[in-house]
Length: 557
Image (cartoon, rainbow, N blue to C red; front, side, top):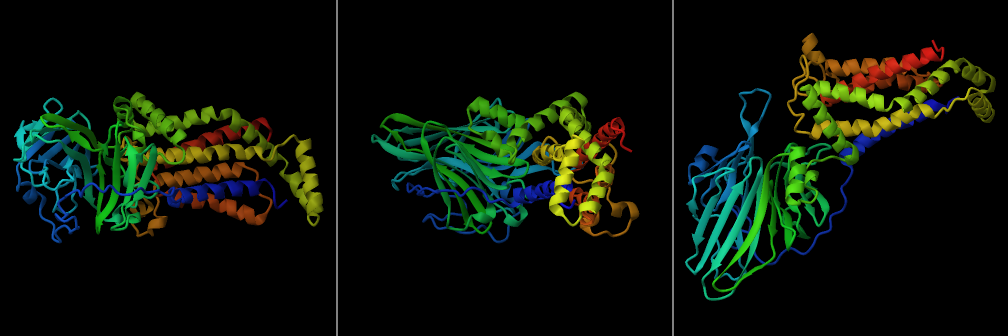
C-alpha cells in the first residue's frame, strides 16, 4: 500500500522541519505606531542643538583614552563593575563580573556599556526636558556636584546641579546586588513661578545589524508597551522612520542573546516610547514621561529604574514580582512554546542543583520525560510491533490487489481491524516530541545558566555544538556542513537503530527516504547545542530499550 502509515510519518517529520524553519523566519505581528512626542528633542552625544543628527567620529578613540577625559564615579557590586561619567551623569562603562567572554578563565569579563566615541558605544542617560527654551536643564555636558565616591548596593550617589535661574536638580542613583539601578530625580523650584518639565531617559548603542541577526533568538530593540511585547530587529528600523508608542508603565531597551538593558517605567502615568535608527548602525530606545508641574517654592519628583545585565531567568521572575514589572521575563525569548520552555528550564535548573552537572541533569530530564510518556509510548510501540508482525500479510495484499487501489485499501483496513491495530497510534509520540524538541532547543539556546556549562569529556559548553568533530579526529579538511561531532554521530546511529525496529515502508521510494533520515538529521542537528543532541541520543536509546521489550512481548523478531 503506497499511502500507508509511513506517509503520515513523512508528513510529521516534514512538519518538524517546517516548524523549525518557520520559527526562524516567521514575521512578527505588525506594529502600530502612535504620533511621536512633540514636547522636546532629546540631546545626546550625536545630536546637534538644533535636533539634527550627526554621526559618531569616523575613527573611534581608544577606550582608556575616552575614560580618562572626564571624572568618573566607580560602580562596584557583586555582579557589576564600571563607572558613571560625572559630566552628564551618564552610565557608559559597565562589565558583568560573573561572566567571561570565553571558556578561558583568564578571558576578559563581558562588556555591556561602553562610552561614546569608542568602537561600539552603548550607554544610558536620564534627565529632564523643557519646552520653554529659556529654562536651562542638565544635559550630557553638565558637570554635576557629587556626594559620594562609589556606587555600591549600600552606598547610593547624590548628584546636584543648579542652573543659575533658581532651579536645583537633584539625582539619586542606587543599585542592588544584581543588575537593577534606580534613578530618583527631584527638582527644587525657587524661581517664584510655576514650571513644567518632562522626565526622559534613553539607551543608545552602535551595532552592525549583520552581527546581531540572532537566528531564532531575538536580538534588537525590545519592550512591553501597554501589555504587548514589541520586538524589532535592527534591520527593520530605517533611519528617520522611528517606531513611537504611548504606554502606561512597561519597559523598553535592547536585547542580546544573553544580555539585556532596559528602562522600566512606573504604572501611574502615560509616557511616550520611541525606537529609532538615529544614524547608520546607531540605534536608540527612549521615553518622554508625563509632564511634571512644579509650583513656586516646591519640589517635583520622578523615578525610573534601569536593568543592565544578564538574562538570568529566575532573577527576572523575582524582579517581576518585586517591582510589579509586567512581563519582564519576556526579555528572554521563550518562543512559541512558552508554556513548555519555561517549565523545562525550571525542571533542568532544579535537577542541576541536585546533581551539580547540567549534562547529567539533561540526561535525567530525558529519562523522566520518557517515564512520563511511558503509557502513550507503550501503546504506540505495541501498535508498531503489531504492524511489523503483519508486514508479510500487507505485502501479500499488495501483490494480490496492487492494481485495484480501492480494494487494496478496503482489505488493508479489514486486516487492521482483524488484528486490532490502530495505524495512527505510532504517530502520537512523535507529535508530542515536536513541541518537546523545540522547547528544549530553546532552553538550551536561551538560558544563560547553560552557557559555558560543562558535561564530561570534551564537552565543555552544552550550549555550543560538539567540538570534537570529524576533521579534528582524522586531521583532514571537511566541509563545515559535514563536519559534525561525535555526539551527533551517536545520535544518528541510535536513530538508525530505532528506525530499523519500526515497520518498513512497503513503498520503495518511502523506504529510501526513511533510510536517509538518520543521515540528514545527523548533519542537521550536528551544529545544534550539544546538550540537545545528548538529550536526543539518550531519548533514542531509552526508546530502543522500551521498543525491544514490547516487541519481545508481542513475539516480533
